[in-house]
Every structure is written in C-alpha cells, then in structure tokens.
Image: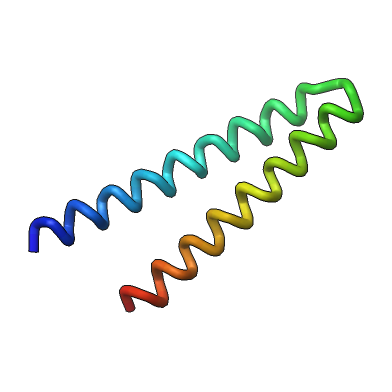
Length: 64
C-alpha cells in the first residue's frame, strides 16, 4: 500500500513541476519582445499544457 502512495505522490510532483514550468514560460513569453521567439514559446506552452491536461485526465479516469 505504501508503494501506491509513493507512486501517487510522484505523479503529483511531476504535474506540479510541469505546471511550474508552464507558469515560467508564460511569464517569459510576456517579457519577450521578438514576435517569432514569443510565438515559439507560446506554442511550447500550448503543447505542454495539452500534455499535462491529458495526463491528468488519464490519471483521474484510471484511478477513479
């Protein structure tokens, strides 16, 4: 049972780290003045946000 709890904490920590990275990218995108670099950062933000959303949805449906 403790192994299951450790796995759950590990998954939550990974989601927290990804969320923190997304937040940092959003802040950096607002500070970037070059249009093309900002566009690339926004695309990266969208991809990471989508991955996080899908991962959270799968984890919620898989574990009940």
